[in-house]
Image 1 (cartoon, rainbow, N blue to C red):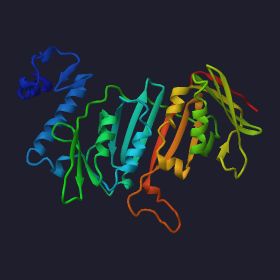
Image 2: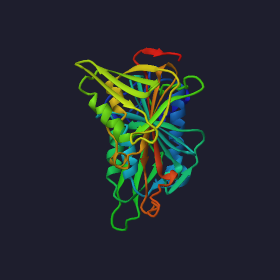
Image 3: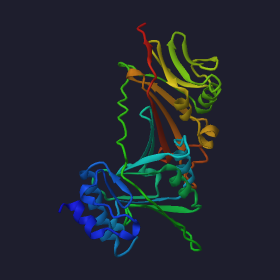
Image 4: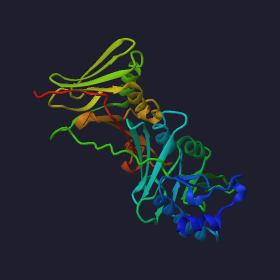
Length: 350
């Protein structure tokens, strides 16, 4: 009897289901609500589950049993960052843990991918003891809703005895909120965005976030396909939409302008993108991004891959230097979107 079958034979609980599954012949393997694409994934997962249960048997809050224990003083900034990559109601996410912080990844049909980088400096404390980089899937909407329940500092722990993500309020002597989010093995491995610059000089521009959102929102009327054109002479960014109608938005670049912060393009570049994916990059901007009017950086890579980068303030109380109005770099969450083009239009030499 193999390791998986032996574990299930010793740990299977008939009360959880009305049908006993013959695990020896089950492909793909399903156990306790988890689906495994192959026996190696299942073996790795079940070994981790056994270790977690043994270590957690004495106390569910035994730090030695956990891969990660971290604490946030204020969840609002994290909620803003996660909400910015939630473009539909039911959306799954993959979370990757490391000694450097937490990365949350969401994607859509292999055409759009978004990543939220939460560096360890964003947390009041960050204790990481895992080997390698554990990854697990969960519901993004559920994760955001659970975080929104906490009005005080929150502690995040992983894994629980059943590989769940645990959230617990701290710092209040009157009440304690507690939540467990069931995790799962990601059904697919996130696609490699394979972002490479076009030649030696990147094709990129940095624009005020509010201005970018306004331009993309205006393109909703034609919808369908949006063409992004960069011209070096004169320096101009053009958004052109066609579908139900035609609309063209020209944004000329001038040094020290109120709209652009940077522009770099040596050759004319033109690619098309689906509007619904382009809109997703700005549809859920947090209020602090619009209020601070930070710059959003757009870069077109080889083959037309579009990278859109935003910065979201994740500040704890008293972290601002009010005298200088300066925000510490460690209190910033980085958000990246990657969009594949519909088709390559042109990249001309000058």
